[in-house]
Image (cartoon, rainbow, N blue to C red; front, side, top):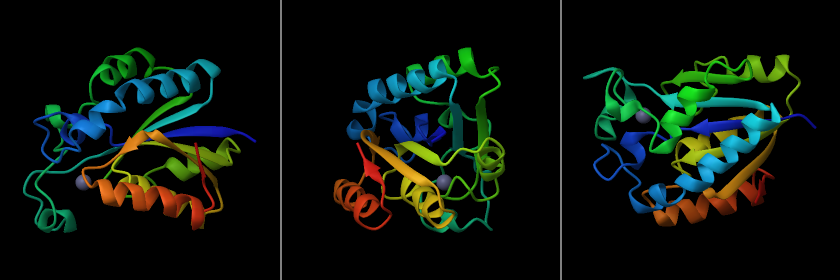
Length: 182
Ligand code: ZN
């Protein structure tokens, strides 16, 4: 089965100590795993997509404006990938199997070309890493399930600022979305 790696929101604002909506320690602790898994897919020549939240400043029409502090604002450092992933991404971004999609909602499928790119390539298995386990990773996995993709979640390469939500989502991936949690 052809596989693809889907990166979700592993950015400065979601991970760094002073990020605007940070997962803090749990997010920082997965940096090595996130990088290692990414390298594995890139070196194998597999499809890799960075699906990264993008917001405009003071967007009164965006539903998240009411729910969360402003984060991942276009053009700010907060939107850069966190830690060593940023420079690694810069070194691989020109490869034809590496993609970057701006997303503006929780799910990586909403308003992006992700599904088109996956279908064109006959990719049936989505491997998902990033943050937050119980928000954007969860919503991406739910859409993947509804669209008939097989799902693999790396429990040591996802994190959340809500530990209880993180644990709950890991169970939900497995018991309700039929995902392999590895
Ligand atoms: Zn957002």
